[in-house]
Length: 542
Ligand SMILES: Cc1cc2nc3c(=O)[nH]c(=O)nc-3n(C[C@H](O)[C@H](O)[C@H](O)COP(=O)(O)OP(=O)(O)OC[C@H]3O[C@@H](n4cnc5c(N)ncnc54)[C@H](O)[C@@H]3O)c2cc1C
Image (cartoon, rainbow, N blue to C red; front, side, top):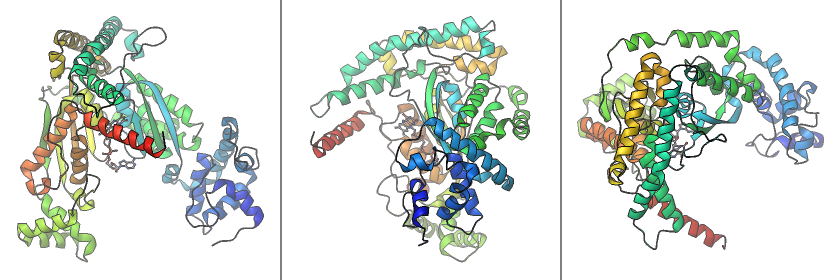
């Protein structure tokens, strides 16, 4: 191991998790310093600790001698926001002067930040979550939380686009959103009363679990009433490079809410990873924004007559030779043969032999987390899906695939949960849906993108999903699990059936599909949680 003097150890210790071993974690460093440090490291023969010491800690320009860094961190005291900023600003100046010259975009992936986006519309969450690589989002759930809280002025919490608020449609828009929220809130006691009488109670179900089951089932039934304008909260952990591109795209968006979000995200991220969020509104960033705007095909798309869709997932394209591709790719890392040679080889073999190779490659999957290997990424499937927007917003969160949606509207009708009718609330639900459709129709005639906000989650949207078989296995198994919402469980089950129809020998490896339907999806999950709570209390002596 590299040796350090006592003095060097004293300087380094606050910033590394150990001084003895070759594997260690960085700590107490501003994000921008971490990014810059790794960048230097990639072009140096020195160890990371030595680079940190020579080029950063002992570099006056970065400000490690300021109280912000070594001193406070070394004493174990938490650094104040102000002190962090001092260090960040100095590190940023250093980064810009010395490192930006390398022009290596991937350096921006080495620093990250957590960000909260509060009071943004459901429409906006989908636009930001379209960004996939380098970002990990989490979003307030419409399945576990009631959206029935008004703001401090006593108004329902929904977004209105600024120029729509100035237009002739403002009254209609507000009236419709208010009505949807009022109906949603008024249905909570009615539907939860209906549900609570039906949840099977036994001594194994605690009061906590019972209430959670009633609440989540009620949320699942009534969420279709929420307009897409409803304000919600979400958080991200992401790296600098991903944020840079996301902000650039948001600036180029036709909706004012996204552009305002771009500006506020950029301003806040400047306090944590300033160097990495500079580009979006520089001349270079503006050119990229312009490129994104220029390549939109709004007029061409609108000129093609729309067609109403039916609920479900239709397989529109797939690799007919998927089995051969997968068998060849499974053998590839273990052989010295070329890919085309391997394809020829597996094509010539009897079907049973090919299936045997794939079966050996998949092995015995004990649970859905035992994922078949990368060869399963060599077969692709494209689905055209039509389902309610509530369902879409859950499914949309998957990242290892290509998804594109059409504008949200009322063209494909809406999903009426059967429990709404059983609970005697059908008329209220339908009236609210009809009012929303009417408002959408009027607004969409002039402002199709802004009209999306007035559409409630029960209306259907159409979207495309192209994915490889490895993701299809993950997606279909996860999204068919018992505790999922019935609407997306049906989509996942439908996709599985489509793959099974065309390639049964591959579909049989999707071992953890749940094809049943349940009256209370969260019942077993809550019972399991009860058992875990009891075990934990026993363990900790409570
Ligand atoms: C029953 C249920 C309830 C849920 N409730 C909520 C909720 O309340 N709030 C909420 O926000 N979300 C919720 N989700 C969504 C969930 O958090 C995931 O975002 C969503 O299921 C996407 O799945 P994924 O991350 O497994 O996979 P995908 O994005 O499809 O990716 C496939 C796999 O690739 C890997 N992967 C992909 N991206 C990354 C990455 N950035 N880092 C590391 N590994 C990665 C992972 O192994 C992942 O499982 C819920 C999902 C289910 C099934």
